[in-house]
Image 1 (spheres, rainbow, N blue to C red):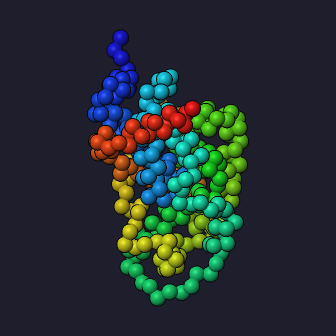
Image 2: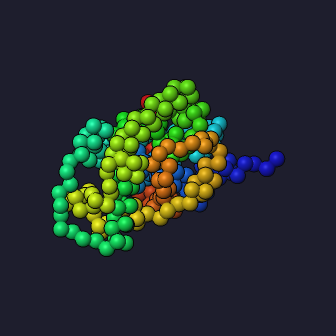
Length: 284
């Protein structure tokens, strides 16, 4: 019987074939990047986290027992890292719905700043995407991960519960409560969901507060990823049919992570042996 192609790639990677390892990383990098982006709230930290997570996958590949699919194993690494590792997080202070609500309730000062219709539309879209991802930071790390897996990655409770080390019933109960909390906030404040805030009206204020940089639109600069592609990449995962409110429209993006370049630089440096030593000490 012909061996599973994924097992062939894993074995070849363990035998030192960097091309096979690059293929494995390329298959999961976009899913890891999008999960990191929603968990951390900004592109810079998401890029950094994606590299850290995939580095952990590379240095621990020999411990992968292949009882699950490779991307499921990488998801476990990603979920654990994003929930528990706070050392490189930009959002060190805990943002809450109350704090964000008070900020959105503040009167917007009138500023003499004009934009053409096309520019205004682009800036409003950037602000909406940025605000939506920051809004997720109002949830604690575990609740945030539950919400993201349940709404944007549409995972069924069996798999999501396994990744989060809780029963499917507990996961479903928590997800339901978090959806209600997020839905209530959106209904009050988010103009896209019928609330009071208007992205276009907040553009000058956001620029003044340095929350929006017209010369550096992080989300607009990312290459969009066809949702069908992410579905295909995660065909072994289980999905829900239902999505939640504004978050169902969020775009998936291609990760800037370059596996070939990453592996080449890693193999040419002393970082790999140091990391392997650190992981061994940590496991003890």
